[in-house]
Image (tube, rainbow, N blue to C red; front, top):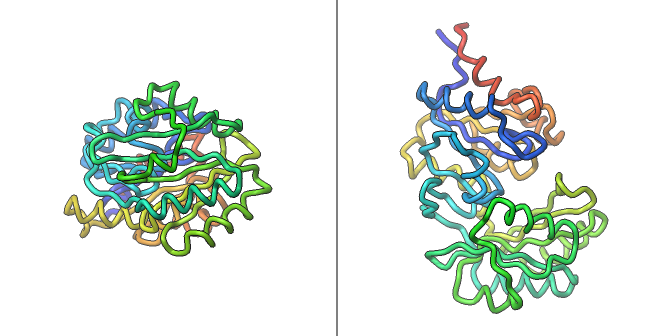
Length: 286
């Protein structure tokens, strides 16, 4: 009898989990993931990042399963960028979110899809976190970046995957309350401290089912892997929905306390490549 933790389907978060704190995938992690893939391990990623970003960050990793991007807004073929399924805001909900942000004097960034092309629509980027958000994408040549003077007009006749803003940490709770009251149940509101620009909280408005747990279900059904045991890996609160649907849950030691508390295993930190080491070391007979 063996206790091979590599069996089944494995879904990994990126930032804070597979990626190191400088937002890179180490050579050790890249080679380890490829070794797992070559051995037949079924694995993919679920991230708040886009498929465009994933292609750069995971360069050299031979993924074949679809990826979950933008926290579950899209299930996407990584190589082509083709969306296999989507959970996006309707026009009315997107417009309501923009109105609420205008009331808060909070500048939005929109991620949209017109059925063919993806766009990241941004304004002047009037705070450091917004500037970081756009400049990071510009640095890796993100073709979705588009300047936009009128976000309200931009959501007309298209799919809005996310409405994003950044506010100072001390204003985040009140901003979330305003958005939730305006939107009711028509959208989900997620807030998380930005790990790369301290002092700023990212707030994302998305479809209520644009979350990792629901997206993992879509992934399992679309790939025919629903009968396999599911192991998920994450470090932050947006990973908890996929913890809810998994057979096994794994967190690195740097994870949020609420995530560590829900994990069936805790590994070394992301900067020590704890998740990949955990898998590579986990095939010994018992």
